[in-house]
Amino acid sequence: AGYLMERLFEAGALDAWFVPLQMKKGRPGIQVGALADDGHRAAVEQTLLAESSAIGLRAFPVTRRKLDRRHDTVETPFGPVPVKVATGHGGAANVAPEYEACARLARAAGVPLKIVYQHAVAAWVGRADR
Image (tube, rainbow, N blue to C red; front, side, top):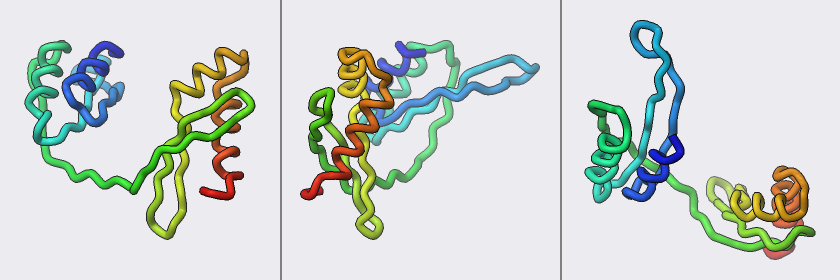
């Protein structure tokens, strides 16, 4: 499943996901979803059909709404962590530390990932220039 997701992103998918479900006759299955803009739709569809056991697919238009975002970096006891900051709707901000950076720092320090993640969020919340 990881390979298929990688290939979908390489084909231009904006997002991809897997959902376990029960198929007809009680068989287990996995529903694959992918979000693509019009310019990448054909490539994502072709990748899904070529790289999976699917013999067909359903496609339908959706709308996508995004908050304004910016990238920043915060300092933690484990090292610098890039964060994404999304704002909108009354000025409230969502901050998301970058997973790969947190995972790398957690491995190097021998601490759980959530500790690095929590330090990164706290560092951003504590900044005066947010």
